[in-house]
Length: 301
Image 1 (tube, helix red, strand yellow):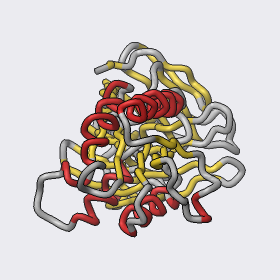
Image 2: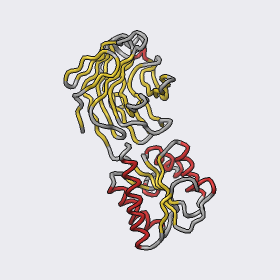
Image 3: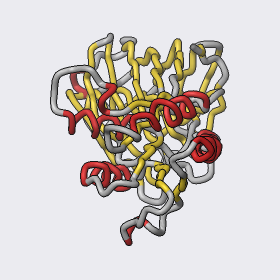
Image 4: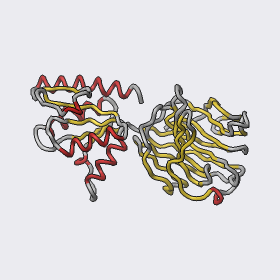
Protein backbone atom coordinates (compact mmCIF):
# COMPACT_ATOMS: atom_id res chain seq x y z
CA UNK A 1 0.00 0.00 0.00
CA UNK A 2 1.37 3.40 -1.03
CA UNK A 3 0.12 6.74 0.26
CA UNK A 4 0.82 9.25 -2.51
CA UNK A 5 2.46 12.56 -1.57
CA UNK A 6 4.45 13.48 -4.70
CA UNK A 7 2.74 15.07 -7.70
CA UNK A 8 3.95 16.38 -11.07
CA UNK A 9 1.38 18.73 -12.65
CA UNK A 10 1.07 18.12 -16.37
CA UNK A 11 -1.84 20.42 -17.22
CA UNK A 12 -3.79 23.07 -15.34
CA UNK A 13 -2.85 24.99 -12.20
CA UNK A 14 -2.22 22.91 -9.07
CA UNK A 15 -1.33 23.51 -5.45
CA UNK A 16 0.06 20.36 -3.84
CA UNK A 17 1.15 19.80 -0.25
CA UNK A 18 1.64 16.33 1.22
CA UNK A 19 -1.50 14.25 0.87
CA UNK A 20 -3.53 17.13 -0.58
CA UNK A 21 -3.59 18.17 -4.24
CA UNK A 22 -5.84 21.05 -5.30
CA UNK A 23 -6.66 21.80 -8.90
CA UNK A 24 -7.16 25.56 -9.05
CA UNK A 25 -8.30 25.90 -12.64
CA UNK A 26 -7.09 25.66 -16.22
CA UNK A 27 -3.88 27.26 -17.44
CA UNK A 28 -5.45 27.87 -20.83
CA UNK A 29 -9.08 28.72 -21.46
CA UNK A 30 -9.07 26.46 -24.51
CA UNK A 31 -8.09 23.49 -22.34
CA UNK A 32 -10.31 23.52 -19.22
CA UNK A 33 -8.76 20.49 -17.52
CA UNK A 34 -5.98 19.57 -15.14
CA UNK A 35 -3.76 16.54 -14.85
CA UNK A 36 -1.16 15.62 -12.22
CA UNK A 37 0.90 12.42 -12.30
CA UNK A 38 2.03 10.55 -9.20
CA UNK A 39 4.99 8.39 -8.30
CA UNK A 40 5.08 4.64 -8.88
CA UNK A 41 3.10 2.48 -11.27
CA UNK A 42 -0.42 1.09 -11.18
CA UNK A 43 -2.16 -1.31 -13.57
CA UNK A 44 -4.11 -3.64 -11.31
CA UNK A 45 -5.34 -3.31 -7.76
CA UNK A 46 -7.31 -0.71 -5.85
CA UNK A 47 -6.85 3.04 -5.38
CA UNK A 48 -8.79 5.20 -2.93
CA UNK A 49 -9.03 8.96 -2.51
CA UNK A 50 -11.25 11.75 -1.28
CA UNK A 51 -12.46 14.34 -3.78
CA UNK A 52 -14.66 17.42 -3.49
CA UNK A 53 -15.97 19.80 -6.17
CA UNK A 54 -16.44 23.47 -5.38
CA UNK A 55 -19.18 23.83 -8.00
CA UNK A 56 -20.63 20.51 -9.25
CA UNK A 57 -23.54 22.26 -10.96
CA UNK A 58 -21.20 23.35 -13.76
CA UNK A 59 -19.21 20.86 -15.86
CA UNK A 60 -16.76 19.94 -13.10
CA UNK A 61 -14.99 16.62 -12.44
CA UNK A 62 -12.47 14.95 -10.14
CA UNK A 63 -11.24 11.53 -11.22
CA UNK A 64 -8.37 9.08 -10.82
CA UNK A 65 -6.12 8.91 -13.88
CA UNK A 66 -5.04 5.37 -14.83
CA UNK A 67 -3.12 3.73 -17.65
CA UNK A 68 -1.43 6.97 -18.68
CA UNK A 69 0.91 6.52 -21.65
CA UNK A 70 3.59 9.20 -21.57
CA UNK A 71 4.43 8.79 -25.25
CA UNK A 72 0.91 9.34 -26.60
CA UNK A 73 -1.02 10.91 -23.71
CA UNK A 74 -3.69 8.18 -23.91
CA UNK A 75 -5.33 7.30 -20.60
CA UNK A 76 -8.49 6.35 -18.73
CA UNK A 77 -10.03 8.12 -15.74
CA UNK A 78 -12.74 7.25 -13.23
CA UNK A 79 -14.39 9.28 -10.47
CA UNK A 80 -17.09 11.90 -9.96
CA UNK A 81 -18.43 14.54 -12.33
CA UNK A 82 -18.24 15.25 -16.03
CA UNK A 83 -20.65 15.05 -18.97
CA UNK A 84 -23.53 15.83 -16.52
CA UNK A 85 -23.03 12.50 -14.67
CA UNK A 86 -22.32 11.92 -10.98
CA UNK A 87 -20.06 8.89 -11.57
CA UNK A 88 -18.11 8.31 -14.74
CA UNK A 89 -15.30 6.43 -16.42
CA UNK A 90 -13.75 8.02 -19.51
CA UNK A 91 -11.18 7.18 -22.16
CA UNK A 92 -8.97 9.88 -23.64
CA UNK A 93 -8.01 9.12 -27.25
CA UNK A 94 -5.20 11.32 -28.62
CA UNK A 95 -6.24 13.54 -31.56
CA UNK A 96 -9.88 12.69 -30.86
CA UNK A 97 -10.88 13.61 -27.32
CA UNK A 98 -12.67 12.23 -24.28
CA UNK A 99 -15.13 9.35 -24.69
CA UNK A 100 -17.48 8.44 -21.78
CA UNK A 101 -17.51 4.69 -21.14
CA UNK A 102 -19.63 3.94 -18.04
CA UNK A 103 -21.80 6.31 -16.04
CA UNK A 104 -24.49 6.53 -13.38
CA UNK A 105 -26.34 9.24 -11.45
CA UNK A 106 -26.63 12.94 -12.19
CA UNK A 107 -24.08 15.62 -11.35
CA UNK A 108 -26.93 17.76 -9.99
CA UNK A 109 -27.12 15.33 -7.04
CA UNK A 110 -23.51 16.01 -5.98
CA UNK A 111 -23.06 18.38 -3.05
CA UNK A 112 -20.63 21.29 -3.28
CA UNK A 113 -17.49 21.25 -1.11
CA UNK A 114 -18.34 17.79 0.20
CA UNK A 115 -15.55 15.16 0.30
CA UNK A 116 -16.61 11.98 -1.49
CA UNK A 117 -14.66 8.83 -0.47
CA UNK A 118 -14.02 7.21 -3.85
CA UNK A 119 -12.28 3.91 -4.67
CA UNK A 120 -11.34 2.55 -8.08
CA UNK A 121 -10.64 -1.16 -8.60
CA UNK A 122 -8.81 -2.25 -11.76
CA UNK A 123 -8.17 -5.85 -12.77
CA UNK A 124 -7.06 -6.29 -16.35
CA UNK A 125 -9.80 -4.55 -18.34
CA UNK A 126 -12.42 -4.71 -15.60
CA UNK A 127 -12.99 -1.44 -13.75
CA UNK A 128 -15.22 -0.81 -10.73
CA UNK A 129 -15.99 2.47 -8.99
CA UNK A 130 -17.12 2.78 -5.36
CA UNK A 131 -18.49 5.72 -3.39
CA UNK A 132 -18.27 5.17 0.36
CA UNK A 133 -17.82 1.41 -0.31
CA UNK A 134 -21.00 1.28 -2.43
CA UNK A 135 -20.35 0.04 -5.97
CA UNK A 136 -21.70 2.58 -8.45
CA UNK A 137 -19.96 1.45 -11.69
CA UNK A 138 -18.84 -1.94 -12.99
CA UNK A 139 -17.75 -2.41 -16.58
CA UNK A 140 -15.04 -3.42 -19.04
CA UNK A 141 -12.52 -1.14 -20.73
CA UNK A 142 -12.46 -1.42 -24.54
CA UNK A 143 -8.81 -2.49 -24.56
CA UNK A 144 -5.95 -3.14 -22.12
CA UNK A 145 -4.24 -0.19 -20.45
CA UNK A 146 -1.59 1.39 -22.68
CA UNK A 147 0.57 2.62 -19.81
CA UNK A 148 1.22 2.11 -16.11
CA UNK A 149 1.27 5.66 -14.74
CA UNK A 150 -1.47 6.94 -12.47
CA UNK A 151 -2.47 10.38 -11.29
CA UNK A 152 -5.34 12.82 -10.93
CA UNK A 153 -7.66 14.34 -13.51
CA UNK A 154 -9.80 17.43 -12.98
CA UNK A 155 -12.11 19.35 -15.28
CA UNK A 156 -13.73 22.77 -15.23
CA UNK A 157 -13.06 26.35 -14.14
CA UNK A 158 -13.62 25.77 -10.40
CA UNK A 159 -11.27 24.21 -7.82
CA UNK A 160 -11.26 20.46 -7.21
CA UNK A 161 -9.66 19.10 -4.03
CA UNK A 162 -8.09 15.63 -3.77
CA UNK A 163 -6.91 14.18 -0.48
CA UNK A 164 -5.49 10.94 0.94
CA UNK A 165 -4.71 9.15 -2.32
CA UNK A 166 -3.69 5.57 -1.55
CA UNK A 167 -2.74 2.93 -4.13
CA UNK A 168 -2.73 -0.79 -3.36
CA UNK A 169 -1.37 -2.71 -6.37
CA UNK A 170 -2.15 -6.40 -6.87
CA UNK A 171 -0.50 -9.15 -8.87
CA UNK A 172 -1.55 -9.22 -12.54
CA UNK A 173 -3.51 -12.30 -13.57
CA UNK A 174 -2.72 -14.91 -16.20
CA UNK A 175 -5.80 -16.77 -17.44
CA UNK A 176 -5.09 -20.22 -18.88
CA UNK A 177 -7.27 -21.77 -21.59
CA UNK A 178 -6.70 -25.40 -22.57
CA UNK A 179 -8.42 -28.74 -22.87
CA UNK A 180 -9.16 -30.35 -19.51
CA UNK A 181 -7.87 -33.85 -18.77
CA UNK A 182 -4.49 -35.51 -19.02
CA UNK A 183 -1.80 -34.81 -20.10
CA UNK A 184 -2.88 -31.16 -20.13
CA UNK A 185 -3.86 -31.03 -16.47
CA UNK A 186 -0.32 -32.12 -15.52
CA UNK A 187 1.15 -29.51 -17.86
CA UNK A 188 -0.95 -26.87 -16.12
CA UNK A 189 -0.20 -28.01 -12.55
CA UNK A 190 3.49 -28.80 -12.99
CA UNK A 191 4.63 -26.20 -15.52
CA UNK A 192 2.26 -23.38 -16.50
CA UNK A 193 0.92 -22.40 -13.08
CA UNK A 194 4.25 -22.50 -11.19
CA UNK A 195 6.10 -20.62 -13.97
CA UNK A 196 3.43 -17.90 -14.06
CA UNK A 197 3.51 -17.57 -10.29
CA UNK A 198 7.32 -17.33 -10.29
CA UNK A 199 7.15 -14.45 -12.78
CA UNK A 200 4.66 -12.47 -10.69
CA UNK A 201 1.38 -13.55 -12.32
CA UNK A 202 -1.56 -15.14 -10.54
CA UNK A 203 -2.41 -18.04 -12.86
CA UNK A 204 -5.74 -19.86 -12.92
CA UNK A 205 -8.17 -21.74 -15.17
CA UNK A 206 -11.95 -21.72 -15.29
CA UNK A 207 -12.06 -24.93 -13.22
CA UNK A 208 -10.20 -23.12 -10.42
CA UNK A 209 -13.32 -20.99 -9.88
CA UNK A 210 -15.58 -22.62 -7.29
CA UNK A 211 -18.97 -20.94 -7.37
CA UNK A 212 -22.38 -21.49 -8.93
CA UNK A 213 -23.13 -19.92 -12.28
CA UNK A 214 -22.47 -20.24 -15.99
CA UNK A 215 -18.91 -21.33 -16.84
CA UNK A 216 -18.82 -19.18 -20.00
CA UNK A 217 -19.37 -16.11 -17.85
CA UNK A 218 -16.44 -17.15 -15.65
CA UNK A 219 -14.27 -17.61 -18.76
CA UNK A 220 -15.13 -14.19 -20.18
CA UNK A 221 -14.58 -12.62 -16.75
CA UNK A 222 -11.24 -14.42 -16.48
CA UNK A 223 -10.09 -13.16 -19.88
CA UNK A 224 -11.19 -9.58 -19.18
CA UNK A 225 -9.49 -9.49 -15.76
CA UNK A 226 -6.21 -11.00 -17.02
CA UNK A 227 -3.12 -9.18 -18.25
CA UNK A 228 -2.16 -12.18 -20.35
CA UNK A 229 -3.91 -15.29 -21.66
CA UNK A 230 -1.90 -18.52 -21.94
CA UNK A 231 -3.52 -20.91 -24.42
CA UNK A 232 -2.59 -24.55 -25.09
CA UNK A 233 -3.90 -25.15 -28.64
CA UNK A 234 -2.58 -28.60 -29.57
CA UNK A 235 -6.09 -30.06 -29.70
CA UNK A 236 -8.79 -28.85 -32.10
CA UNK A 237 -10.95 -27.95 -29.13
CA UNK A 238 -13.67 -25.52 -30.23
CA UNK A 239 -13.99 -24.00 -26.75
CA UNK A 240 -10.26 -23.25 -26.57
CA UNK A 241 -10.26 -21.53 -29.96
CA UNK A 242 -13.42 -19.58 -29.07
CA UNK A 243 -11.72 -18.31 -25.91
CA UNK A 244 -8.51 -17.51 -27.79
CA UNK A 245 -10.49 -15.59 -30.41
CA UNK A 246 -12.25 -13.62 -27.68
CA UNK A 247 -8.89 -12.75 -26.11
CA UNK A 248 -7.57 -11.54 -29.46
CA UNK A 249 -10.75 -9.52 -30.07
CA UNK A 250 -10.30 -7.50 -26.85
CA UNK A 251 -6.59 -6.93 -27.51
CA UNK A 252 -5.27 -9.22 -24.80
CA UNK A 253 -1.62 -10.34 -24.82
CA UNK A 254 -1.54 -14.07 -25.56
CA UNK A 255 1.05 -16.83 -25.27
CA UNK A 256 0.37 -19.93 -27.36
CA UNK A 257 1.66 -23.39 -26.42
CA UNK A 258 1.65 -26.16 -29.04
CA UNK A 259 2.89 -29.73 -28.88
CA UNK A 260 5.51 -30.25 -31.56
CA UNK A 261 4.13 -31.94 -34.68
CA UNK A 262 0.68 -30.34 -34.38
CA UNK A 263 -0.70 -28.91 -37.61
CA UNK A 264 -2.00 -25.45 -36.81
CA UNK A 265 -5.04 -23.87 -38.47
CA UNK A 266 -4.17 -21.40 -41.22
CA UNK A 267 -5.24 -18.29 -39.30
CA UNK A 268 -3.09 -19.20 -36.27
CA UNK A 269 0.17 -19.98 -38.11
CA UNK A 270 1.28 -16.35 -38.23
CA UNK A 271 1.28 -16.08 -34.41
CA UNK A 272 4.46 -16.80 -32.48
CA UNK A 273 4.06 -20.11 -30.61
CA UNK A 274 6.03 -22.04 -28.02
CA UNK A 275 6.46 -25.56 -29.40
CA UNK A 276 7.19 -28.33 -26.91
CA UNK A 277 7.54 -32.11 -26.61
CA UNK A 278 5.68 -34.18 -24.02
CA UNK A 279 8.90 -35.29 -22.33
CA UNK A 280 10.80 -34.22 -19.24
CA UNK A 281 13.18 -32.21 -21.42
CA UNK A 282 10.22 -30.80 -23.33
CA UNK A 283 8.66 -29.55 -20.09
CA UNK A 284 11.95 -27.91 -19.17
CA UNK A 285 11.94 -26.11 -22.53
CA UNK A 286 8.39 -24.89 -21.90
CA UNK A 287 9.39 -23.56 -18.49
CA UNK A 288 12.29 -21.58 -19.98
CA UNK A 289 10.41 -20.20 -23.00
CA UNK A 290 7.19 -19.47 -21.14
CA UNK A 291 9.19 -17.68 -18.47
CA UNK A 292 10.91 -15.49 -21.07
CA UNK A 293 7.57 -14.55 -22.68
CA UNK A 294 6.08 -13.67 -19.29
CA UNK A 295 9.11 -11.60 -18.35
CA UNK A 296 8.75 -9.68 -21.61
CA UNK A 297 5.07 -8.97 -20.92
CA UNK A 298 5.76 -8.10 -17.26
CA UNK A 299 8.33 -5.59 -18.46
CA UNK A 300 5.61 -3.70 -20.33
CA UNK A 301 3.05 -3.52 -17.49
